[in-house]
Amino acid sequence: MQLYEDAHEQGFCSESSAMSSLLRVFSSPHCIYKVSVVSSHRSPDNEAAAGSHRYVPLSRHALATRLALFLWASLSDERLLELAGRDGLRDPGVLAREAGRMLKDQRARSLVIDFAGQLWDFSEFGSFNNRDENRFPEFASKLRSAMAQEVEAFLTDLFQNDRPLTNILQADYTYANELLAKHYALKYRRHPVAETKNPAAGSHRYVRVPAGRGGLPMMGLFLRKNSLPLRTSPVQRGVWVMENLLARYLPNSPADVPSLSEDDSNHAGENIRQQLERHRAQSS
Image (cartoon, rainbow, N blue to C red; front, side, top):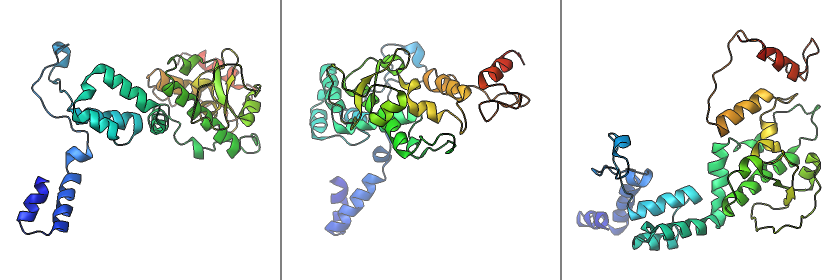
């Protein structure tokens, strides 16, 4: 309003004053970026570890904004703005309740699409088609879509219903439609368990999986994405586990190491397991 009044006093008409004010607001770094304001406060918990960094409490509205950006990838709603206006989010209990409320909202789907999709590298799977059509004719668009929806439904349930994070690696269930259940050789029927509402499930149902076949690394999306056109790839799958689950980034192999065969076996008749055993037997 001060910008508007200043422009108006300089002789601008009402429309031009409003446009000038909005232009100033939208071009401000405080509007475009999440700006951390420099403060002289030191961290009360660990001054030694802080070094030259300073403890900077967020403003009440910045706290609401960051909560909305993280959980919704969107703007604060009226409830958040109202709480920010009276500094209610400083109360840990209120903050926890608001996070719980926001996770139940449809906008929390962004946690799966934006956050988890980037974290575990599956955002582009909808257009992924790295397969030989003659070798794998069953991997058509419907099966690819079913695999993508399985991951979305699984993670939506994980986030919204506060499942243990260990389910990422060792869940005894997944979400599958009839096509995907047939691909996995699972029984497609409703199990006598209390199913929770899952807005991302669609035609996918909660189904049990055999021991050792649960969690993200065993889902078709990640297995297919980390394969080659003609065969499975233990190397690519291992790299995905190392980098995306263990945060260990591996260097490229030495230039003089021969490549594995592009098909299931090489000219000598060795399958992939045998080729990898031979690689591992050579320390170089």
